[in-house]
Length: 218
Image (cartoon, rainbow, N blue to C red):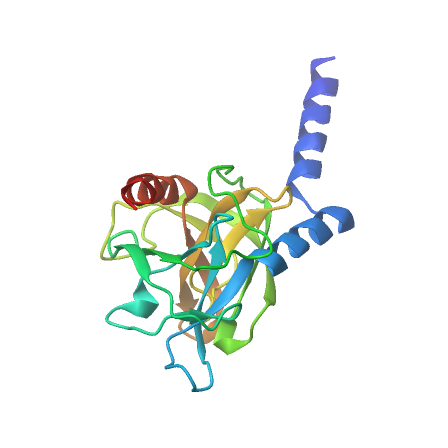
């Protein structure tokens, strides 16, 4: 009997962690409506997408990574031509909160998060090399990983088995149930191949600490 229930537990865990066509469609729809590409070009010039981000509230808050914007101005997105103010920034956590006057079609709740499991399928969407709305799939290779940032050795990251290409920083990571798992940050690439390696995402509890501090101060 114990073996039977153990088998059922493993079966339902695998079922929950891996995608079905219906779950993928729902998450894809969520990503398409909430994710933005981000540019720092001046108004009137063609936008060059250097990062990704996503709406986290119906009132227009957008979360992304900080490192693409150090010392930059004229932050705009693919869903609006307005210049967005930087509401809050943490270089240590590598997070930036932007504010748009218009909300997105949808938004991703960072409060409704899960920790990530070994072998779990994850989805995202971003702008690698400026290619907007590029869909991304990967597997969680390590839920808690040190060493994702050599300058912050004490921070842990969500590690996945694929790299985040340039322009993908700031994209949301969701699981098959649409739960928030983190924010794509950077990668470690193999020396012989710059296209393969590991991706590291800022963990959801780190995002929570950042937002609890700065959303209240706004």
